[in-house]
Image (tube, rainbow, N blue to C red; front, side, top):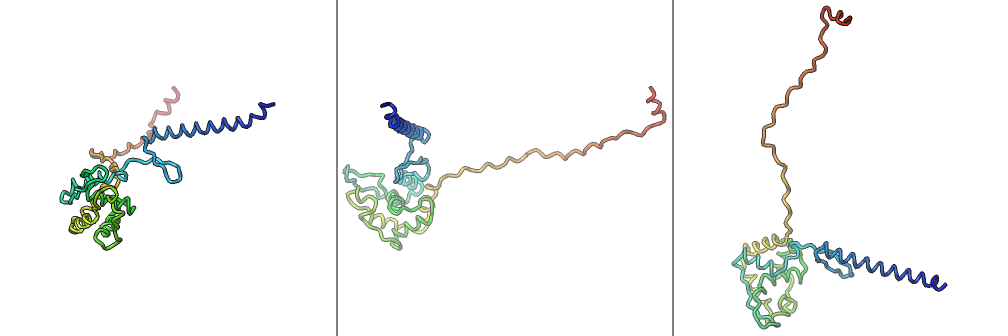
Length: 212
């Protein structure tokens, strides 16, 4: 009798344990399939984030920019607050990218968005605030004033080259479509169909062959 009373509760406990084991299994399978690139959303769910151009870190992108556009000033002489040493990777372009992506949340693969960011630096769009500028909380001195001056010293061609290069870096590479192979050999002319030869006309004496 006691077993009958406890049976529903035990069933629920068993079901809960089974569901927990199933969730753990699915999470483990997702880690294996997705290579561990899981990103949790604000609602507690998760999604697999593929590694592509959109995940390019500002420091990595800045290094690529300086390799192509060596005339750009680096402005990497600032001292970090935590180490007391100069951080050579904290460059003008890395801060420019962080301002664009992290602070303003603008699209990195759209040229117009980069031009809007340039307009901020040129003082013809949104006003920039020193207390929110990249490096304000990590560097001993705020680099915003020097960065703005460096961007304004670029001419129009240099600014356009910077925009074009940044867009190309953050645009996912599309696979080239496979072109159909052309037939190199000359197509031979279609042969004329052989006319079907019907039964010939009977000749004298053919009727006598039926008698054999």
